[in-house]
Image 1 (cartoon, helix red, strand yellow):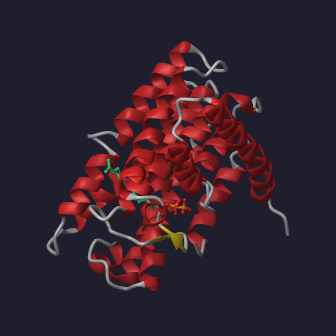
Image 2: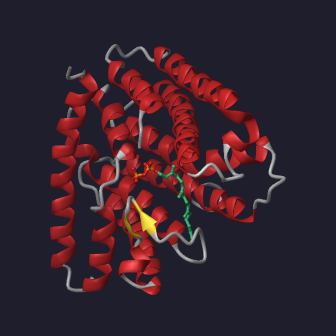
Length: 286
Ligand code: GRG
């Protein structure tokens, strides 16, 4: 059976692939772009991710507006930030992973220097894309730049990674929750909040979307822990290790239920796809 969520996903994928294509065409026409840098960025951006963050932005936007060109640059930016974080996360000085999505990690195909620069470029280009977006207001641009830099910068995702790198076996639940919040929930929350702002949501709507997406972001990471555990069973920086499987499932359900309650506070009627996304996360297998 095709669900509402499937329909939105099909529409989104078509739009997103077109947006990505035009992004790369523009980049290729810029003589200052290094070919190998662009190839390295392309390799990771086009290597089969779920596109969860831009899809969430698309769904949030859709409850307010259908003028999707307004979230083109935001959607690309969210996937570029996610991709930069994965390229850097796989580097030998970080998690030292040879594989990503079943394929050689970026630094295994290109070299460490190019991978590092590919990530730096993706992150920096986000701020160019947003600040030069002709479809959104100057006020929204400033809001987006503020939210994104706050959520993924030194007080956000980057410190989440630093805490993660320095964590030891005595980590404790509260510290792990903080790492999960900063490393994962923050970007998911920024994706939804920025989409609501671009769509013209009121301050109270943006607030509800923020609460919803924090809970969805935590549920996403807890589900990730459950999937990783099924794979490797050995990471001490995992809810499974600290809480056991029953309590971890409970945490997943609690955050998912709370996310649904946050959505119900929105006066918008068409929230079903976001509710379906919460359920999709609970059941996903990758
Ligand atoms: C500044 C050196 C430096 C690093 C940046 C690397 C980093 C900060 C942060 C790491 C962020 C990270 C790897 C978080 C984990 C989040 C997570 C659950 C990733 C997997 O996301 P999915 O499942 O992946 O959406 P796909 O493959 O579907 O795109």
